[in-house]
Image (cartoon, rainbow, N blue to C red; front, side, top):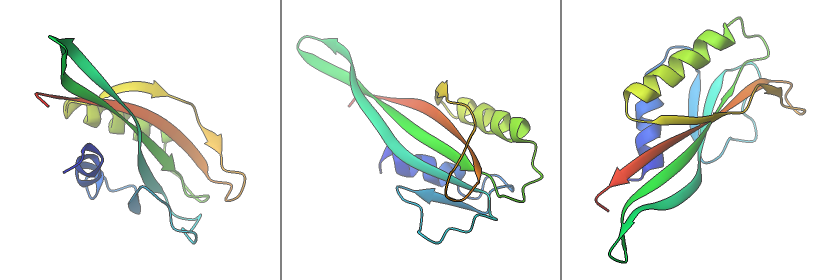
Length: 121
């Protein structure tokens, strides 16, 4: 199982506020009046070199929260709860990009980059 699939399984159904969690792609007709999480791979880096070998791989994953255009959620609370949950599961929050608005759907969205290191590869 991939690290991305592990994250999908961890998030799918855990929180009550997203209507859906999408992995790798968002359907063309995703409704703008729903709140959803979108996750994708970002980068991978070999780590812990010694004796001409690496011993671990760091996976960076991108999580985007697209808020419904009718959302009444407290964005800060939602995002902080998500980040605390991920940290408790062994992820490291490496970057939070700041909220923007999608020019096509007018949904506010937040991008959070998390890392997970797999050792003994």
